[in-house]
Image 1 (tube, rainbow, N blue to C red):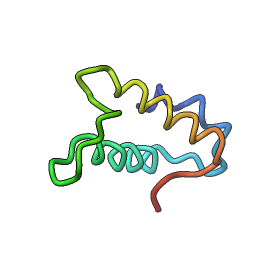
Image 2 (cartoon, rainbow, N blue to C red):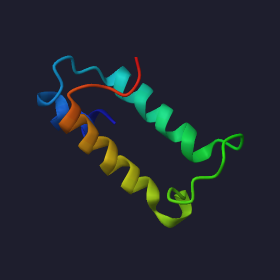
Image 3 (cartoon, helix red, strand yellow):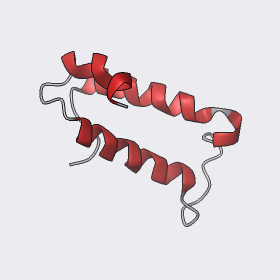
Length: 69
């Protein structure tokens, strides 16, 4: 993950890999949680995990911050 998100260091004022990991875990809870209603737009078997990564990267670029506190 460190190599994957290293280029985003310039978009974040306080780049912190641990916070990126926290956001990633938060996003994966929605995909794999059996207690939440199923999100049909994100199915791991159909390759939607790559799409989720791309959306998260776009969020980091445009919002200059993290999802979770």
